[in-house]
Length: 141
View 1 (cartoon, rainbow, N blue to C red):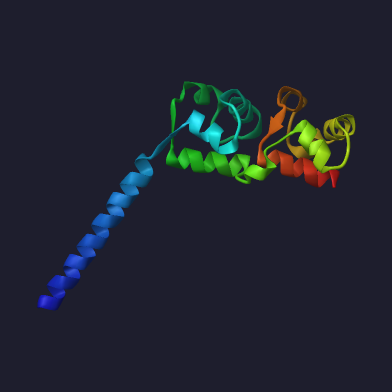
View 2 (tube, one colour; view 1 turned 90 degrees about the vertical axis):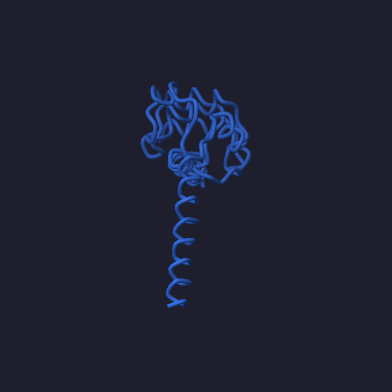
């Protein structure tokens, strides 16, 4: 009987720890500034990324948000990519490809559909999220 009580107590403690951990995880919020810092970019650049390079959060909703819940942050980072070393400017992309800006720009403009971006996105942004940078680098070889 004492063993059953001990096992029941252990199970109750484990369940309580799980519930508290889940609550902390779900209630965790992150600011736009903190997300921008994670990528080493400014908030205006992050706003452009939201507008052009992801479908998780509509841009209008993004403008109304002050904080992102944990799950929104996870989905957003999955869409934009998490490899910080691939947050590159157009000039840095050209350098990685051992090319020049004009050649890279011309090739990107010819392959917008393949890259999944628009001309407006290419022309509006000077720094790109990892998911887009990787596609551009793969395309250019």
